[in-house]
Length: 115
Image (cartoon, rainbow, N blue to C red; front, side, top):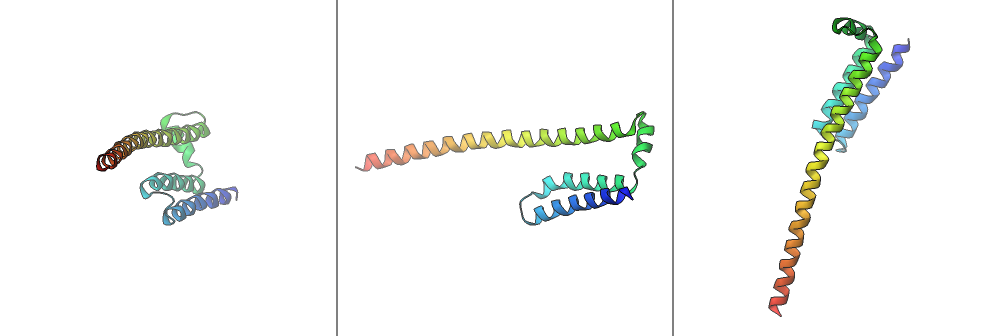
């Protein structure tokens, strides 16, 4: 019976991501990984002993620790991916700022030369 709550939470996460993509608040490429994570949550909620089986295959003694390690790896990967995007956008912002400054200087130069 406790699994019902986790199933509802997983479905809610899927719906939340889907609604945000439809409202164009979230990109489709970014939402893919969150949908995968929500699907994995749903699978683990439906089949809770699957994490025990996977832990035995890998050789982990305490199955919940495997779950937490997988969650941490997922979140670190997402943070790294977002950091990469932020760095690329910062470079573009700096370049655009420099281009705007150059264009402003040219406009001022043209105004001064026409007088």
